[in-house]
Amino acid sequence: MASGFSLKDQLFNQEKTRYLAGLFAQAVPGFDAGRFEAEVMAGLLPLELKARINWIAEVLGQHLPGPLSEVAPQILAALPPPLDPTKSDDDFGDFIFAPLGELIVARGLNSDPELALDLLGEVTQRFSMEWAIRPFLNQHPERTLACMQDWVSHPSYHVRRLVSEGTRPRLPWGQAVSLELGTPLPLLGQLHTDPTRYVTRSVANHLNDITKKDPDLVLDLLESWRSEGQQKEKELSWMTAHACRGLVKSGHPRALRVLGYDPDAEVAVSLNIKTKMVKIDDWLSFEVDLFAPSDLPVIVDYRVTFPRASGALSKKVFKLKQTQLKGAPVTLTKRHRLKGDATTFKLHPGPHDIEILVNGCVAAQGRFELTP
Image (cartoon, rainbow, N blue to C red; front, side, top):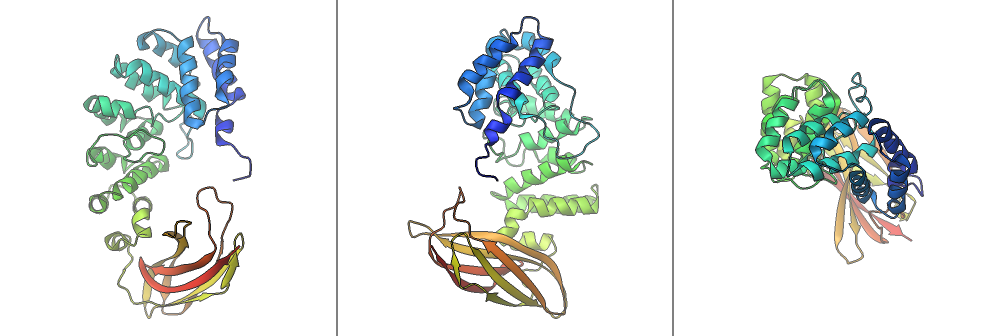
């Protein structure tokens, strides 16, 4: 990401605020677009991303007084056409509509949940309402799940995706939900056959969340889906790999076997570290030689142990290669930049260990020195 880039400024700014104001000015008689824009901008810029969503919703609510039964027709009238129904992926919509979800929660969660859910189903076709749906799952779980049962067959894949994404156990930026892990699984069972990658990716992400607490629940489900044969083999294989990516990083034996990789396979592995001394911001270079006497699919990763300022150690796994060994030596090369300006992870000089993982098991290891 380029230095100085601001996601919050790209998504919520004066231009976007003016666009939203214009939509409501055209749809709602007496809506003062200029005053709305001025009031939003007066408090917007110091706020972080989620706070900007809440602030815009608060100001919009001041300009749209009354109960949800009165506000809902105004929101519907202001909405642009739904997102392109001919697409099947990567069409998240415009973040400027996220505040509509917060306004719907504020006006409808306690007083009119059925109308609120219907409205979320409409708005999510312009921008995902995955955050706004979660208070309804907590406060009205049976009613919301019944609505979601209808949504799994909705003609818009954005509405279908809301079912799997909205019920995720670990949704980024999302409020925690009190559902048991297994409660949404019947819905996911219907959605896993979806023809759009936007939906199946959401299902796989949901399953990846569950693996953090109950890997076998996910692996049992994936194996049952495979035996049912209702999804295309290629797509289900992709979903399985995506759902198990966390388990693969941790070397979970059953997950690796489900994906077709044998953790107990005999593979000869050697590690050659080309740069024994590496400066911060420079490149670590190494080679890995692998050999198996017969055809063998392998996932090759590498794990680096980083010392922390406290003296504790932190390990991070990185992808290297998925390949097929065919009775002949295979050499993999890698250059890994050790960035000193990362915002989420600070490097400290000193010895660093590196391990080569083949099908989740440590197959070779070495050490390099990180210098200032």
